[in-house]
Image (cartoon, rainbow, N blue to C red; front, side, top):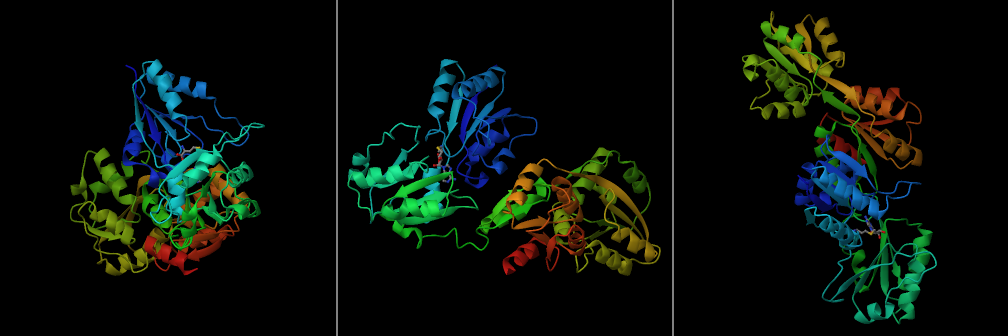
Length: 494
Ligand code: SAH
C-alpha cells in the first residue's frame, strides 16, 4: 500500500517551536526527508529504524534538485513508507511545499500538510518586534528577496511602500542594499526603523536595528550571516523595549550537554529556557549488559541493602529483573541506598523510597554512609554500571563491608556528534560543556580527542567528574552538590 507523505513545518530552530502534531508525525515516520535548516534536536525525534534522507545543502555540496526531491518522496511512499517531508519554518512559505504537493497529487500519493512556525513571524517575536501593532500599522507583508545572479529582484517596492505595513524580507541578506534602495527609491523615508535578525529564535540569535539609511552599513559591520531576515517598519522601534530574549541570563552562551539522550532532557531544556544555545551531544549511552548471570546469582543470596548509584541504574535494574523473569519483589525487604537525589527520584517513580542518601552525592560518601549505617553481619548488593567508579567498592572493602558489585547496565561511548563538537571547538564558540559523570568526560574525550580541550568551562556535577576533566587539562567548575539545580546555579554565578 502506498504510504502517506506528510509535509511538516519544522519551525525556525529546535523542537520547542515544532508543533505537537508535527512531532507526532516525525515519531511515527518510516522515512524522513529533511532540509538543511532543520534543528538537530528535531532530527533526534526520528525513530532509529526510520530511513533518513538529507536533501539539504551542506558546505560545498549542492542541494538535491527539486525534481529529485519530488521523486524521492514518491519512491518512499510507493515503497509503503509513511514519509515525513521536514522543512524549516512553514512548508508553504517560500518552501516549495506547493510544488511537492502538486507532484504527489499527480502521482496518486496521499498527503497531509502540518504547518510550521515561520521564521518570518518568530524571529521578529524573539527580537522584541511585534510584526503588527495597532499604534503603528495594520498589515504585514512577507516578501522574498532572493536574488538571482544578474536578474532584478522583481519586487514591487512602490506597492509595498504605499501599503504602509511592516515588511519582512526573507532570503534577502545578499540583496540588502538593493532592498533598501528599492524602498527609498519608491519614496520610503530613509529614517524608517528597520532590523536584520540573524539565527532568529536560536540561542545564537543576533540583531541589528537601525534606520533604513544606516541598516546595510551596520549589518556589514556586524558581519551578520544567513539565515537572516530583514524587517522594515515602525514596529522595529519597539525592539529594545519589548526584548525578552537577550536579557535571559545565558543568552549568547553555547553549552554542550553530554549526558545520554534520555537524561539530557531536563538539563538541556532548562539551559535553553535560560537563553543558552544548547548543543545536545550525548557522549555515552546505557545498554543492556551482555548477560545477567551475575545479577541472577546474586539474587539467590540474601542481601540487607541494595545500593543504586545513578538514575539510569534504577530502570536498568527493573529491566534486568524482567529479563530474568522476575520483578521488583526480588528486592523485597532490602533497604535502599542511593547516591543522590536524582537516583532517589528515579526510585520514587517505581513507588520506592530510599532509606539512605549521603549528604554529598558521590561514591565515596555513599560508601562511608553505608558503612556507618550497616549493622555487623549485614551485606550490600551494588547494582550499577559494569566497571563503575572504583571509590565505592574500594571504601566498602577497606571498611570491611560484605558486598557484591553486579552490572545491571553497560556504559558505551558515543561519537556520532563528534564532528559537530570538533567544529565548535575549532571555531572557539563553545563556552561550556556539562559533565554529569566521569563516563561523560571519557566519552567526550573519545569523541573529540585529547588535545585542545581549552577555551571552554567544564561544568562538572561533582568531585570525581571534576577530577576526570582536570586530568585532560580542562578548566573546571564544580557544582556545590551533585544536582542539576546546583549545576545551573554554578553557571549562573559567573
Ligand atoms: N519556510 C521558511 C523560509 C524558507 S526561505 C520559513 O517559514 O521560515 C529561507 C529564509 O528564511 C532564509 O534565507 C532566511 O531569510 C529565513 N530564515 C529561516 N530561518 C531563519 C532564522 N532562524 N532566522 C532568521 N531568518 C531565518
